[in-house]
Length: 150
Length: 328
Image (tube, rainbow over all chains, first blue to last red; front, side, top):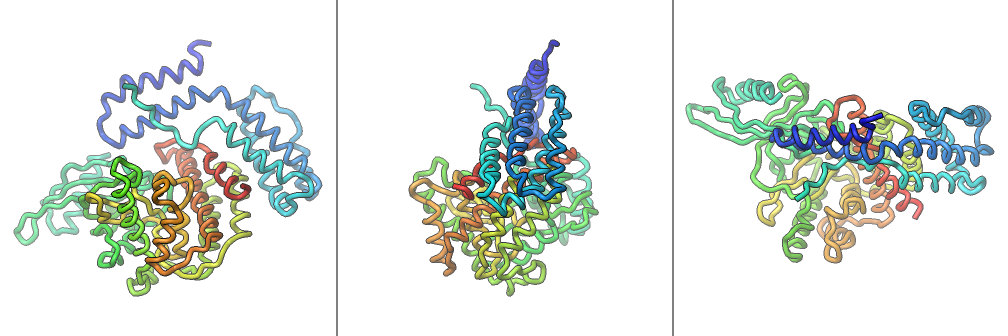
């Protein structure tokens, strides 16, 4: 399928950079436009990593919740168990929904995990998840305008 | 939009300065500042038959931002400080309800000077940068030395007393609930840690809330005005110390090997007479990062709502620092 998503994002970035930027002279719009171009750069470079990241995040969070099972009350344990059905790994919207639900369950489980940091291994697994997540997350906090080439 | 703001500013200032023929020229929105719209302009009017000119800055609430603050409080604080030992911009007029410019706004005199967020790590020789650091953080100490009761600040700001750390945490936890777009378990971990380790507060002072080289005006090497009081409040002065010694902002606040957090705290303690317990400073460092993360999450929420022009993602760099500070 051409232009591919990457090609489309690259083309949009190029149009903005080459056609629009030279015409924008006011400081605020110029700065915002630089940020938009930086965001398109980041999307072009990283959009293809999003499904793999979501799958990893879902599985790793499920691992923490599984380790925490003995600490959870019956209702929460049942909610965790109900999340075990597989989604279509190519359905991005389903992955996003499932990842958010898993993170919600982790938040619900955290009082129990924090109250019992050593017994089940759930606490160190959660900390390891948080650490690895910061490395795997596909985007940086804020898109930066591209550095002008000489 | 610029034409509408110019028209509305003209009407507003004509009322305030009692001159229907007032002129507003050169209005433009600056790119400085993520939280408020800053509009600079010149005005020309007549006062008792005498022609006058002035340069002003209007700070207007944006539709969306990284921070939700109250122009009424900002105006009240600046007005209270106008004759104090801490130099601040002169505030002129307040539109707390947004009837003038569509959204709450204040107008201040536009002062001369340079805003240089990398003043401590720019091209000046080392000894000049250290001297600037002394002047800069002496201003912070001067804020903490203000007699806030005598200035009337107790009438507009709440004194949290000895529970200032928990009051600050309560505030930011409520903000997280208000703005979060999705579950943030990392923030929940930090909240739990902060609740377990909250120190007591020994003294209540005025707290600037966002003190940094980029929030002062300089003329040459002199610090001439302290800006951006929108997050100022009463609390523990260690909140500001935790903010300026926050490892995340080291590039702005430290001069490696010459102006380290220990130097800053020693000088601040000598000037104020306050002590800085290292465990309490660490606690406030972590809260400082919580506040930083909150600005990102607030901006993320505003972007998703279509109210903010910058795209922000999860503050994973701050989460990484949290884990280092909390877990080692």
